[in-house]
Length: 238
Image (cartoon, rainbow, N blue to C red):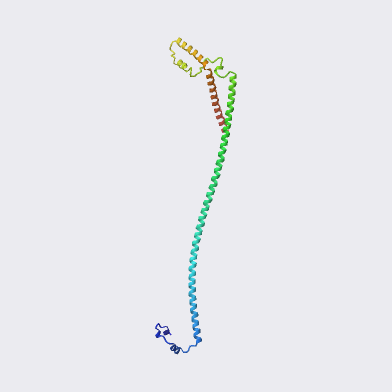
């Protein structure tokens, strides 16, 4: 039988030689042997195909697992990034709401402070106006009673000196006199100064009245400021 598979066709036995060697082979037996061989061949082919298919399936499964792992990692990273972005958005929203609330409270407090300051200012102005009105009323009463101003004094005080610009030079000259000089000259100078002062006093009675009135108003305003500060300190204390 080995000769049948020789690579040289000339060395292969002929059909007659095979028939003579093996005898007459029935057609039925040959057919069965051929069918079995074919069946075996097909089984081998199917097994090889199945093995290849299994290998291919295994490779595909590995690729699929790798892709699934990569997809899973990508999804996890995406979820983490989305969660981080969402957290930042929430923080920004909370900060914005907090900032708006703080601004609203600051504006409210500012308006309250402005109202309080305005009320305090109005009260102070009312108090100042009231004190000024009382001072003006008192001044008018004193003027009517002839108790205000040097022009209403029938008997002025002997030591009173009205220091105005017109009489300043006489007062200065009086201070510059030497005490060791002659008594008579000093007395004459003083008498002449007094006479001139009396004449000028009559001429400037109007300006003196205005000067006294302005001084009184200035003094009343200063006293009013002092009283206002005292009342403010008392309110802060209690």
